Every structure is written in structure tokens, then in C-alpha cells.
Image 1 (cartoon, one colour):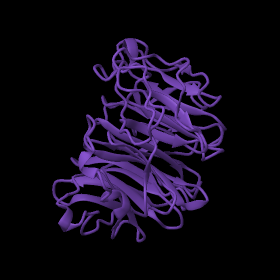
Image 2 (cartoon, helix red, strand yellow; image 1 turned 90 degrees about the vertical axis):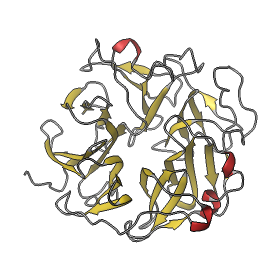
Image 3 (cartoon, rainbow, N blue to C red; image 1 turned 180 degrees about the horizontal axis):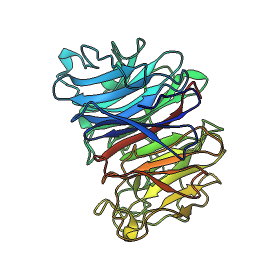
Length: 372
């Protein structure tokens, strides 16, 4: 097994049947490790972005239950806690799945779960505390699940401000806190009504957010792939703004449909998405694989296809299936539910097949060994 060295790029691929780890010095030739947690679903795994040497994996195990496992030697040995995040006994709610892991400020580690909930750990996932302000928020009983369940799938801490955070819950909507989770407000004005061009004129009307990312240079700017379109919003905006020029429009939802969205690691106003036909047919349009990119904050999107299959590629990419690394030029990675993993070494301009015949890809994450 090839050694993982400082400076290597590491790509973590969570699948329906375990976790796969790829690493490379030049992003041309890749070595692989795994699968780890064979037979278990890994919806998300991350490389600690600050220390660049610890892997966290959200494992939904039939034996252990939903837990966050940790490895400090890239899968050589795993630390598995006795239990994962839990709701209070009084709530009558039980965690069934882990959806997203996210490092916060200092040593904080967050996890989003199903049924929708947010939990924080200060000891690398050994123990967890509940964000009661969100998890037991008044009106929770009215939250509706999306097609994938009632899941908290997006956690966006605010760089430099530990009190601010944005989360996405399918299909309860978008929630923001300015007081470290003591209270939360909704954030959904400007999003289309399903299948219509009418826009929500209130913040507290639930929408089916699919994924959100912050702009790499201005964290107040957020891009959102919603069930009913693509959007952008910044602090002070009264509502989300539609940003769909260049994207295919779904007949069923009335807007650009897809699941993932990823930000460029350092280029302002640059993000990536993977359009799909629509909610009734969640595959790439025309069976042609494409990743779209905006470099102007969503004013226009450009289709990138060089090296991607253009015939018979009826692929689906899930909400965690698209990521960038922090190299320059940036690497971009996309995994499909039929087990293909593609990568780009040049900001998405051209693509190569990195791995094939994997189990259904649930998530892709990338990092640099030794830190950002």
C-alpha cells in the first residue's frame, strides 16, 4: 500500500458499500485504499481541513448504529465511539442516518442527521451535544421530508464568526443563526413555488433546498441549488435571486434542477453544478455528462464536457457528489450513482475517469495532506 505523504491530494469517496480513499502527488496517478466499513453506507467523510491528517467518516452501520468514526493514519486504524449523536429521550426522536460532517471553529465538529438535527462535538466525535434551539424548534412537527428523507444535509459555519451559521434541511427549508444556535430564523424568500414562476414572498415558507455553498472570497455570498432552481443571496438582500442563465430548465419544477453545488477554493464568484433533467427523471439531460461553471457569481453558466461521456451516460449525481480541492489550478471531482468518479486538474476545463465500478457514490470530498 502506497504511503500517504504531506502535500498529497486526498479524495474521500463515500458509497453505499463503504469508504474509498484515493491519494496522489500530481493528481494524474492515483493510489487507492479501502473499502473501509464494507457493506455500510457512508454518506459523507472529510479530511480535517486544518490539520490535514485526520479522516472523519459518518457511518450508518447495522451493528454500531450511526456513528462518526475517526482515523489519524488514513484508514490504517479507526476509532469508533460507543454511540453517535442522539436526541433526548423525551423527544421521542431517534437518529437513523448521518448526512454531513463539517469542521467549525477551533476543534468543533458538526454533524447533520436524519431526522433533521444538528449536533456538535468538541472531542473528535466521541461525544455530541444537541443544538436544542434548532432540534426542538417550535413548529418542527410541521417539517416535511424531501424524497431522500427529512435530513439536515448542509452546514455552513461563517469564517471568522463562530456565532453565525446557515443550515439546509430537505424539505423544511433554510435556517440561519446569529447567536451560536440559541435561536434560528428561516431564510427562504425569493424561491419559486414548485412548478410555478411565483416566488415565495415570506422567509418562513419551507422549500426543498438541495445544497448550498459560500463564495470562496466573500462568505456572506451564498449559492443555492434548490429543487425549484438555482439561486444566490448575500447579506442585506431581501430575498434569493434566480441565477439560471445557461442552465437547462426543468419542465416539472420550472427552474434549473440538480442536487450538488461546489465552490471554487479561491476564485471569487466561481462555482460548479451538475444539471439533471428534473425531479421526475433525475439523470443528465440527453444522456450527456456535463459539469457547469459560473465565474461571474451566477450571471452565466458554461457547460464543460471535455473528457466526459456524451452518449449513453444517464448519470445521477447526489447532493454530496461534487467537490473541489484547494490546489491551484483547482481540482474538481464528481461521482455518480452508477459508480464512476471523474476528476479535473484544471478548474473543470477537462476531465478524466479516475475510478469506475464503485458502489453507488454518496459523497466526494477532497483535501491536502498537512493542511489547507
